[in-house]
Length: 506
Image (tube, rainbow, N blue to C red; front, side):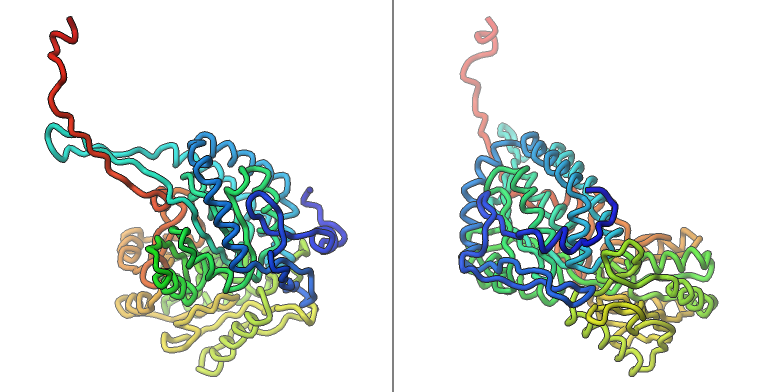
């Protein structure tokens, strides 16, 4: 497929297709025959039905993964890397189909979803290179002995992905577990499963049967993965509440589970008075991820702390810039901002807009339904609030939508206390031309990933993750790779030589 928009993308990419799960190298329906419907967030119309997996499907997927794992591990990094290369080629050839599926199913603009897919190449190339660089260690722990370490995969890994970058997460998030010799049982979000089910066909072509298994379904399906006794390593991207539930259910399963969690954020952007205002405004809007996923990102700017000297002009320029964004159907090439993922999420975001007004914040622009969009779509004009205080809900709770709050500050210590005053600490950014102040502030911020005069961008190889309730573990780096491997120590007592050196050489 090319990037040329087809006349009827829903018919071309959805209703004419058959979406099935992947278990043991077979594309299958749920064993029970259960299905769940898929709605178009741009119109509210039903798109199709997909399988709703059950505990029996998770059991079958886990058994298939267990069966495939020894041979997959025996391929070594080089053999597994060849599967990665085949997979990368298949993704490239299916780029338009996958991007359109995310736009139709998730509501993210199709132009942004093409970029999401293009970004995957760094991960498909990068993980094999990192895996090839892994070495063990030799320890001089005691004389006359040899002590060294080796790594081995866990076996079967369970992964549950989030709704906001469906195809990118389904491609990139499993890669570190696969390149280290584990096999996979993956469940996409029940709100955005289409592109992952399309990927099932590509995984099946690129990888041996049973190495990758994909089961769709609801929370009960996810719980079956979390609590399965033969899945010892779990990874989840999503909300704090669900992450805490996964921790609890994993502990209740009766088996020790190794977890990584990439959760929520209420991320602060700190703006000092010496910045170039236009650059800072562009950085603020870019950091909102409006034209990527409608602000539905745990890493988005949602709190902008602007110094009093430039506050009013900053708000004025940001409002004018936001007014230029075109809100519309996600699979229209001219759309900048699509709909949020579901009617339920629209209700949630709209509730925050209403609470901001009720609690005394100034709604500078947005927060309403745009003109000219389908009446059944989940559209919200990007909302900009000023005069926000830390006590307000919009100032302290993660909204996960196209809403941003601007705070005014003049005292540095008070501002820093407010920036760090939440139980979330995923990302932050600092905007100033004084690098001494920038680094002092970055060091003082309680966040796992801090940008200076930039925001939102990820760089493969640098550890991504948060502090406090935002994360457990780090991703996209060697740090993550090692978490998919168990370490063992091998000890050898060398003892005395069995023959003299002279006799051996003579």
